[in-house]
Every structure is written in C-alpha cells, then in structure tokens.
Image (cartoon, rainbow, N blue to C red; front, side):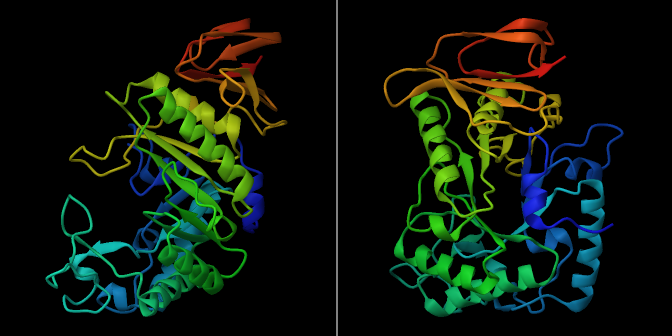
Length: 366
C-alpha cells in the first residue's frame, strides 16, 4: 500500500478524531491492542514505543537509532497505517526532565540545585531536570529530533512542559531547523497561549487538568480558538480533559469532545487523571467517538452570547450531521433541525433535541 502524504492524512480523516497520549485505551474483549491503537488518528509516545532503539547508552548521549531497529519500526509503521491510513505518529523527545538513567550522574546537562545536586523533575520521583538553557544540550535535543524524523518512522516530535520563555524559544528554533519545514512539532502548552513559538509549532497538546469551573472551560475554548488561528500549518491541536469522578463522567467526555469538534480540526481525548497510581492518560474507548460525522462543512457558530466576548456554546455542521457543545454556565439549548437526526448521547431520533448545560451531542442525520 502506498502511504498517503502527511498533509492528506491530517486533512482527509473523519470525525470525531481521537488521539493517544503515551498510554493506550483499554482493550475490550475481542479487540487486539493493535486494533485499538489504530482507532486513534494521532499517537505520541517515546521513540521506543514505535520500535526504535537509540544507538548509544545512556540514551541522552545518542544521536540516532540502530539500523536494525529502524527497519523493524518501519514495518511497524506500515502495519499501523494499513489499519488506519490517516494515523499520525509522533515521538516525544525529552528536554525538560528525564529518568536518572538518561545521562551519567555527573554529566553537565543535568540541572543542579544551589548545592550542586541534580534538581528533581516532578513530584512522583525518579526524574531530574535537564539544563536546556545550555546551548550544547539544545543542539543535542535538536539532533535527536532530527534522527526521529529522518528515520522515516515518525511524522514529527512532541515537546512536553511548554511555555514561551527564552530557552524554549531557542529550543523550538533549533528543533525546527533540524527537522525541516514539513515535519510536525507538537508542544504541551496545557491551556496557555504561546505567541513567540506559534510560528514554529504545528499543534498544542492541551492537557487540560483544570476543567471544573466555567472559567476553566472558557479559557480552554479561547486557547483552542487562538491555536487554530495562530499555529503553523498543518495544525494538529490535541485537546484532553480528565475525568472528575470516574470514567463514567460521560457528560464531561461529551463536552470536551464536542468543544474540540466545534472549534477546531483537531483531536480529542478523555482520560484518567494523573493522580491515580496507574499510568497517566489511560482511557476507555467510547462509542461516542466512533466516526459518524464525516468532514466539517463550515466553521463553528456560537449558540448565543453570555456577553460580547463569551459564547454560551457552539454548533457546527458536518457531512453527516451536527455537533453541539453547551458550556457549563449556559442554559439548556433546544436544537431544531429540518430532518430527523439521531442523538449519540441519548439515542433519540427526532427533529428536536435538547442539550443541557455542560454537555454536548453528535446529531447524526437519518
């Protein structure tokens, strides 16, 4: 099978479109791990997940991959694209922190505290900060990003913990120069805007850990709209929220999914919160995500306005139906349609559907 060019894989996929952030979806009985993986239209993980093996140990010193692992990983890529011809594959390249085994303990690229010890990277332990203010280390990160793209296995790279400080701006420039104009850069900016690096990156991983108040949802929406206007094309914005009580918070799942659909051409995810003892970003696959809408035929339209700057929600028409998203501090909205539509949320078939606050729905034309 001839692989489709990257821009076509992004442009031609159907919706809803779901991504995988490191950890997989649970595999229901009768569905293989590869089949579940291929339901995702964008996947990011470490290079090793895709079959690549660094050519040096410790891996922080590597500048490429072993030839045999590149060949094996290319076969793995071909298998995944056979299952889903529109999948985009991205490798995380570490730059902000790493496991203690990433570099020799006394290496200059570790960031040190005031007494010269390696500075902890995050609360769960085992990871230490890297000194990406060091130009030599930034060049090493760029070299690893270049190797990932040059392998022919990956479509781009992901950079975690992203803000617009001087060091990261310099890093983004180095990575973009190394990988060229056509490969992808995905950056984890959460719900923040990054105007200085916007021309260099193709998408935000919006890890929306704040999603409990109306202000949280307005900030998520505003950042997503900004990213859709401002980031480099082709755009691959990836929007994730975590459950509040359980994976059965289906109203919350529908809200993040429909907000993503109404405001972007991006990818959505509803996953486990990070404070669980299990791996972060694990998730269930919801029937709501099964591709039923086709492609968008217009931009999202506000349902109404809380004030001059803040919509109460949105709707958007697709080839096969309409998406509706209602923010938590809005009222219920009654949607009137010309022909019968079936609700993905309730199963109701009607020309009239009511969407409650803090919810969303896919209304598929019958």
